[in-house]
Length: 298
Ligand SMILES: [Zn+2]
Image (cartoon, rainbow, N blue to C red):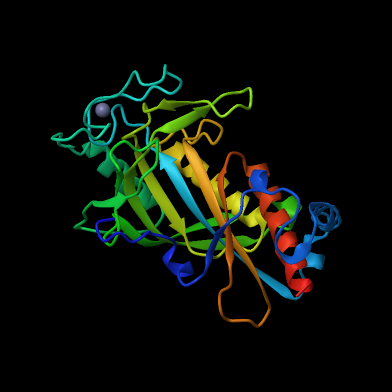
């Protein structure tokens, strides 16, 4: 962003942000509990999560990135055929070379408006882009073109019915905002487990819509059903392939658990880039059990 501020879910601001990745934990975690303890706890609780977390309240918010199925990228005329050879669909604009001028693809606006209307949003009649400055290998520009204070759409909601086999029931999940941005490239890691990498910039400049939910979900099931509804919606609207395995639909889940009656927010944990609904459901329920265990240990 031009002001250098990192954006996060406005409903969750004020929390201390901690990122905890399942694949990076080794040995032990905070609170002195070993992984074996946590695994045992998880297996006990996965069949009776609600019973285990009695006395605790879980708050879940989701940020969803939807990759748009436009013929060309957001600010240049490069196509983005998924699976093409690395660095074959790039140009000076999407690589951010000095002196280049990004020109917005009007289809990005059209798709954003479609999604905004489908999510019962208030559309912004005036909007703008901002620079989100950060340095990483997959971002040759040194900034992402995104939206900060005036997103394309705000204050929507999504209605859905939970599966009958899981108890059913109607839910309405609030959505804080939808904003437009362009994607970064990606690092390709070798399958041998070595640290060698290939930089693929084909994805730089591909248009995204980021949907930021309110922290309205209370279980892994609700979060997975919310994400599945987003998938159905973007496919129905024809604005995205909506394929989690290929990365055209990506979810970052923020979770924290607090004792019932506690009003202030605590430390949240973010699980990034979930690539299936079942994995999301399991990862969230595991994380709920893990935080309950840590709370119970003081
Ligand atoms: Zn380009």
